[in-house]
Length: 141
Length: 141
Length: 141
Length: 141
Image 1 (cartoon, rainbow over the protein chains, first blue to last red):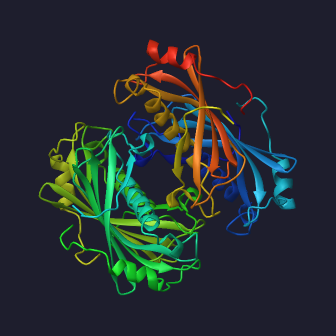
Image 2: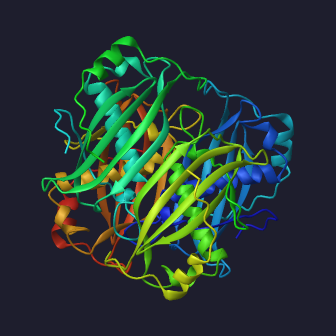
Image 3: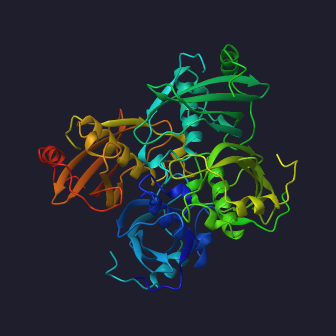
C-alpha cells in the first residue's frame, strides 16, 4: 500500500460495469488516468501540462494486475507513486475499495512528455525536481 | 425500416455490455456514429470530411428510442437515411438484429459542419447535391 | 435552469475528449446517468433500486441538445428534475460549466422500472410519492 | 510479428480518439478483447465460453506496449497467439496498421476461466487440447 497523503476517490459508475456484473477491466486504465490528473492538480503541477501548456504525458506502456473486482455501488480510492527514469516518468497505482481497504487492482504506466505534435520533449525543471523529491516504494507490483 | 442499399453491420462487443446483461445505452450513439462514417465512405463522400479535409459533422442534438435490447453474441445491422435542412444535416437510423430483423433501436442525430476551430462552415457543394438526391421516409421515428 | 438543491459536479476527464478537442457527445449520456444515480443517493431513494434491490431504471429513450462544448480542464455541474408519467419516469438535465454557468447541454431520459429479468415492474410506493412531490418546470428543453 | 492464419481487422472509430488526435490508450485493451472473441469464433471454440455456456475468460492482468499511435481514418489488424499455463490462459497480441504493416502496439492478457459466480473453473478439455496445439513465439514482447 502506498503511503502518500494524496488519494483520488470516486464511486464506481453503472456505465463501467459489464455482463459479468463487475467493472470492465478497461476502466482501470481510466481510473489510473483520472488519478494522475488529480495528482497533478493536488501537487501544484497542473500548469506544467496540457491544457495549460503543450506538454502531455503520452503513455508508452501500462500494466494492470487484478486482485479483485468492484461492482456498481462500490466506492474506490486510488493511491499512486511517481518517479523520474531519465526522460521517462513512471506512475504506480493501487486501487482499494473504501471503507474496507480491500485491494482490487495494482498497476503502472510509463510516460514520456510530448508536445502537441506528439514529439518527445523535456519535462519542466520544477516538475522533475518535484517528482525527484517524492517517496518511492520498490516493492509495489 | 429504411429501404437503402447501404447498411453497416457488426457484432456486439463484450465491452459494450453492462450489469443488466445487455448493451449499455450509450453505445447506440457510437453505433450511429460508426454507421455515419461507414456511409460517408460507401457513398464516396469520405473526402469531403475530416481527416481528409477540415470539415467535421458536429453533433447538435441526438435522440435514441430503445425498442429492444441486444446482448453479447448478437450481430446488429444499422441502416440510415440522411437529408439537408438548410445548413444542417439530419441522419436517422434503425438498428436491427441479424438475421432475425428484430428492431432494437431507432434514432436521429442533427449536425452542422464545423472546421477545426469548431466554427460552422458550409458543406461542399457535391456533398449537398449528393444528399439532396437521397430518399427520405417521413415516418421513421 | 433547474431550481433544485441537488447538483452533481465533476471534472471533465481526459479520456472523454475526442480529436475535435472537446468532450465526445456520447459522454453526455454518461453524465446524465451519473447524475441520476447521485440523485437517488441524495434523495434517500438509493435502496429502492439496484444493487440494493432488483429494480433498475431501464432507458426507453433519450435526447441530448448540445448548446456548447466542454474540454479537458473544464468542470461541469449537472442539475436535474424528475417526474412520474403513469408507469414511466422522466428525468430532464441541464449541464453547465462551473463557475461560469454557461450551459453546454440539456437533455432527457425516459425510463421504466425493470427487474433482473428485464421485465417491467412497479416502482416502490415511497419512490413514486417522493417523485410526485418534486417541482417540475415545463419549459426546460 | 505473429505468424498465424487468424487476424482480426477493423477501422479505427472516431469515438476512440482523444484530444491528442490519436486513439486513446484504453482502446487497445478493447481491441485485444475483440480479437480474443473473434479468435474463439474463428477457432471453433466459441461454444466453450459465454454466452454459449457459463465459462468466461476473466482478466487477471494485462500489459500494453505502445510502439506508435493510430488515428481516425486508419485501419488496424490484430494478430494473437495463445497458450495454456496450468490453469491460466495467456494471449499475446500485435496490432499493426494496414496496409503499411507498421506496428502500433503489442501486449498480453492473462486469464482464468470463471463461472457466472466469478468462481474459477476448469476450461473444457477440447479447448485446452486445441490451445496446446497452437504455435507460440517466445520473443514477442
